[in-house]
Every structure is written in C-alpha cells, then in structure tokens.
Amino acid sequence: MDTKRLIRILTKKLEPHFGMTTCALQQKVSSAVQEAMEETSELEDLLEQLHTRIVRFSYRKTDGSFREAIGTLKPSVLDKLSAGMKPRRHTSWRSDCIVYYDLDREDWRCFCPENFVTMN
Image 1 (cartoon, rainbow, N blue to C red):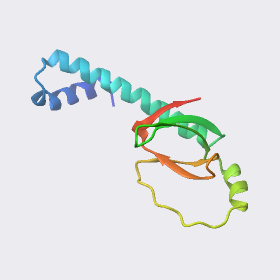
Image 2 (cartoon, rainbow, N blue to C red):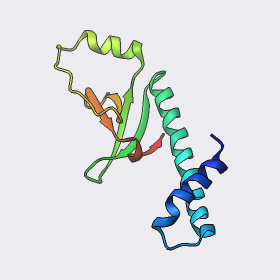
Image 3 (cartoon, rainbow, N blue to C red):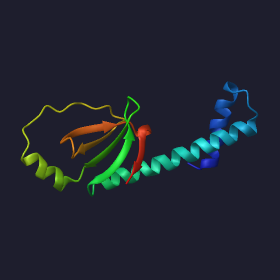
C-alpha cells in the first residue's frame, strides 16, 4: 500500500481521539508509520539472516532488561544440534513472536517483534 494513503487513512481514523490539528496529527502518524516500516524491514532482515547463518542480535525482554543473543534458524546447524539432543517437549509459542534457537542457552527462545533492538 502507498504510505501516503496509509497515513491519510490512519489520520482520519485517529483524528476524533486527539485534540490536535489535522496537520499536526498527520505529521505524528507519518513519523510513526515511517518508524514502523523501518523496524519491519530490520525484522525481515533478521529473520532472513537467522535462516542463513548464526546471528548476534539484541532485544528487550518482557521485564524491560536487554538481552543480547546469539541464535540461528539455519537448518544445517539445527540438524547437527538436534542429533546430540535429548528429545524434549516442545513449548508452544505465541504466533506473533520471533522464535529462534539460542546457541548460548542451547534452547529455543522467542521475543516480541516490537522489542527487537538491533542486529550486530
């Protein structure tokens, strides 16, 4: 979707809820949409990298602390790791979480996409 059209639609929907002028609200919405698009792009890059290599990245945990992780979703690495592991009961994750294999903790972990900070 065209970002300008998206901004106009969001501004119209949010206008009744804020005491701002349309112009000021549109600037706020525009800024928020731009930030969200950049974050989405970074998350897509992280997921692509996780599937192709071992990645160092960080995110904010639900308790507010920061976590630097080394993880992967690369099939060849996971196959080697699973060969030496005992079978475990798989924990179900929320469908909106980013799931990865944490090489430091030697276990599966997840985080909310909105908590992603950076990829190193």
